[in-house]
Image (tube, rainbow, N blue to C red):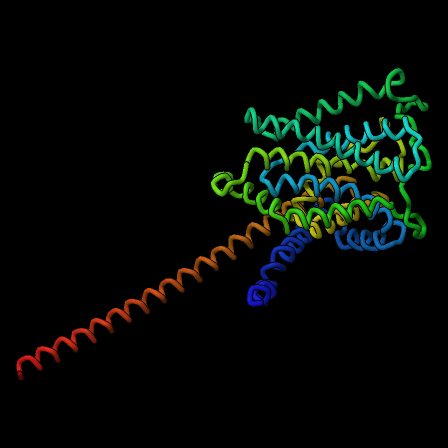
Length: 390
């Protein structure tokens, strides 16, 4: 009860809110300065963004856009918690979506069977693709950053090879894509006005809950975080570092395999040359912005979608199209810097408090020792007097 009370004390709440407040303030000031430097009114830009982003069609668009962003961020965050930099989420989700689309287009099973099969194929391919980097790191000491970057390139080449009319694709005008997934295997939509929300938002929610529970409430999650903080300490406590590295990369890749599912089962129903790319790299920024926390990453994904949606309207208002990209970069930098500043301030205050407490205890101990010495001296004097009298 005492620990829970300390967790929600006024000081703890203030420390938790200090970094986001500082980041938002700094991002607002710097973004305003950048917009003003282009000769435009920053306050009008923010008004346009809020007004356009609050419309119902924009809200639906933002939610649908945030689903793959959130899944990508969760995949990246699993590696971050292990102190691994899985920069290959982009290649993992693309190759996973491609082979899932091939399987989905080749079969005509009932939707209750085919939809789970497509999802499992995507997760298995993503896990396998990321597992290669984990195995190379543990057996050959190759950095996962280099390996995953190379695997991104290989994934693109592999898809390009098979995405041909005489192999696994069909030609539709100027585009090549895999055979369409049957309508019975399309994922459901949540009816809203004017456009529906993708039913795959449920997948994002399930992944968020699983991420929170597994990494924060299980022994496996504790071991994973322990290895991320200190491999030597974790190994000394009996944790297999090599096994945790491979397992973390496999889990990260499995979640990465789901990134393309919202587009595949709710929008395009095939994998083509126009399938979205770059979502994996966006996930890195969102994971940093959300501090690897499931709720924080959800808010960051929605914010990213909001900026992309409202950025289209800013172009119609005469603002430079690069403004949104600059704002996104400013926000990420401000969040990272603000949290680091607050962390150092809190650490310095804690060190000062510990130092003051140790000094107080030392002074109290010295006073006690001096009092004990005086008492002993007085008793010795009295004993001598008693002996003389005798």
